[in-house]
Length: 368
Length: 162
Image (cartoon, rainbow over all chains, first blue to last red; front, side, top):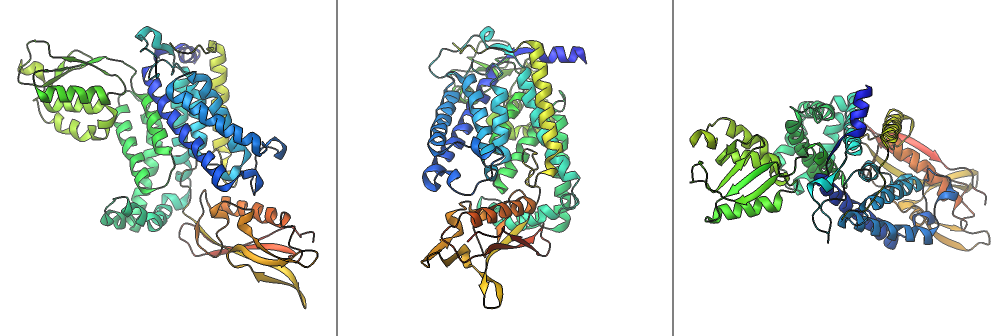
């Protein structure tokens, strides 16, 4: 136990991905603070009407001070986003967001509270050493920093799943699919409007299907809480979780919860900057295009992208990916590797990896 | 270059983590004690809806009677007899707490919405000085939990000083 705690407190790592998480959280903080400003301008100061403060009423700021606070939140969110004094800005943003929630309980939303908590934890990480606007890229050594608070943010993500899945498990209506069936009845039209086929909506609305889907949702939440921590199961858990949240995003109104959770998922990926290589044939348009796509969408910085260097790999390929262990991959296996590492392609990873598992093609070393 | 920001020493990190996890776990475990389960991450806990109806208790010829205030609006005289048009939504701005005679989704569950309506009816009753006629405000809710048949809930404000 003591050794575990010491490892937790002293673990250091590359903060490159933390910079990306900071940018997303900065954007979400900005979205929320702009929403508060819009609310202030259209509906007026919340304290002038009915509100339910958790704090004593005397601690709720008057209109002028609340207006300044809202402007301050916007400014802090911009600082977080661009990476200038990002950590103090994250800390201040988190504390102000919690304060605002405590001023009016009617405005409470789980995603707003979660955002404040993640901002607080992120302020204790080396999240200010990458994705910084108007600053030269920090070296790998400069990006090193303590990861204990990032681990705590991961733990918080698991706690959210346990709380949500556990409460559903203990609720008869949820377990039996009543809640889900009624939600489908109520919001089915909204899902259809967003592009979900009508047949799927009516199928999910059936009592037996709702019951099975409810059990699957509960199991998903509880397994994600654990699976995200397992080295072997993590990639599958992340893929399943991404789709779980994308489906929720399409079928429900959850404010920013989907994007927040997906941003926090980045904390679970292995922090290994440029540990893989992507080599491309600069004489081919396809090679140059794939390299440009990789550079644009490799937000975790997992690939060192360079033009082709002659070696013993078959020269008919536009792109070759060299894995962490040094083995090269081409074709569908390279695509599976790219999908696993590049966030925008990650939702496609499992089917591509499944196809790749049925072929020996793409193992460049075996063909050399 | 990144901004300098003090790092916590190792012991403080463990202490912070223990406090953080302890507080969050406590909030999750005690969520049931709060009507809105705030800070407890009970996502999509219910699929319930409410149909609120606003009534005013006023003096009738044979004692107090309840009259409907359609859409949450009514006309009442003040202490010197001048009539005023009053709106619930002038005081309660949230749509889900001011849409009367319509079906609304109970976000965060029926229990949360009932508690909020109770607080709102007390608040409105205490903040309508231009109404010298209404003795009490009453919100009648038809609550349908998870697709079940509706049940009536009656929320009454404290007696008003007129």
